[in-house]
Image 1 (tube, one colour):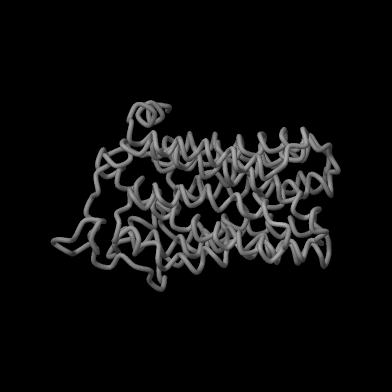
Image 2 (spheres, helix red, strand yellow):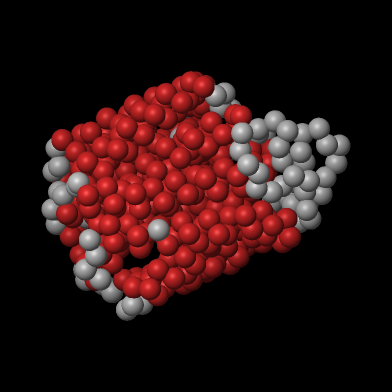
Length: 397
């Protein structure tokens, strides 16, 4: 069952892309754990915090239609490297500014950088899978989750030590930039495979302009995949942006444990994704995603009914396990939709899934302000049941 992990870690190119995923996750884990700090610094209520968090999806939505253009124009490899460097720089901005509008502007730039990096690195994964005949999509997303876990733990410890967030994020930016420079030769050695629409007898490399590689209006199977993706990504986004707030405001745990709910969620999401490349071919994407929806719903209910440090962390672990294979299955399926260029399927899926991941937490903020945060989390549990139901209506690859 673990043969695919040996393949992943012994293939220098797949491991290099995996390190890009873990870097993106580490950055996001640090930021997510610092959200309560931003909330307290500017004395925001939940609705105001939700509005602030809307800045990131605005940036992602604006940039998403251009993501494929950058891949076509500069190649998926250069776009991945440049996107990650821009991401580490922009993540410093939200914790640096003393004025809320500038924090919002910084988050817009983070969203734009995240959008480009996300599409580019996932395109690299599908290219490697095709080139070597291997399954690494789930493992790469597991690397993101591992980074999310490590980032949230690191940020919790540093917050407990009263380290200034701007110093924390600057140091991380320097380290990841150095890592990118080390990985650059290996990443640039990845094959820039041709991106062809099914039915075409030719095409141009990703460095050129492949036919059909653009955002399209979803329909049919792709539309159902996107609806499922919205549910999974709202769940992921809520866990990423609100778990630390839940641990502080509802559970009222110690500062050292504020990020441990997110860490537990991320750890089990990483484990699920590391096993996903073995489980998905064996049981099928539909069965894995259906079971995941039920597990995620149960985990959220546990955290709501028993709002204590241990039980909440345990509940968030279940959520991580349940949602773990959602992105790998849906991204992989979008890339294989018949009659559509790989870049177009990924770009379209990314537009909506990133919207769910980043905009969902905004809605959670308004619901929390109107009722309370546990009630807002219960809405996410309902979405988990919805995606478990919708899975029966589409074939996932």
